[in-house]
Image (cartoon, rainbow, N blue to C red):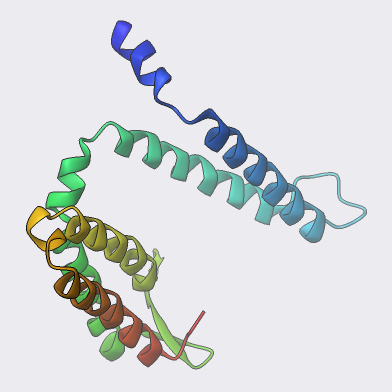
Length: 162
């Protein structure tokens, strides 16, 4: 029990309350724009958003239990998977409104650019935490530029800049 109370000491409560406020405002905005005047039931869009919020919070809580070094050590693999999925997408992706930015099956759809955002951030964090690279600012800048540039170019080639 002592460990749990120690962990609570390191929580940034202003960030938690800001997150909760943004979630509530977002849900209210979705609800108010998608609910019809005569309807007394919750909007299906707001309900779907609430489900995804619960899923995201669950994933965030579970990932907070994992040692951060795991994410840093697996950042290259995740980045490579993201870049590879962006490359494959150019050939077998689903075309929607002129943009080929989704993998789509009967059961689910997946947008690799979302994975690429997280993978790029993790890869940059891994690079910045490397002590050897910190002593070489020009090399650090060049590698950072390339890490960011590769997914950007592949996303621009999809035709969906959003």
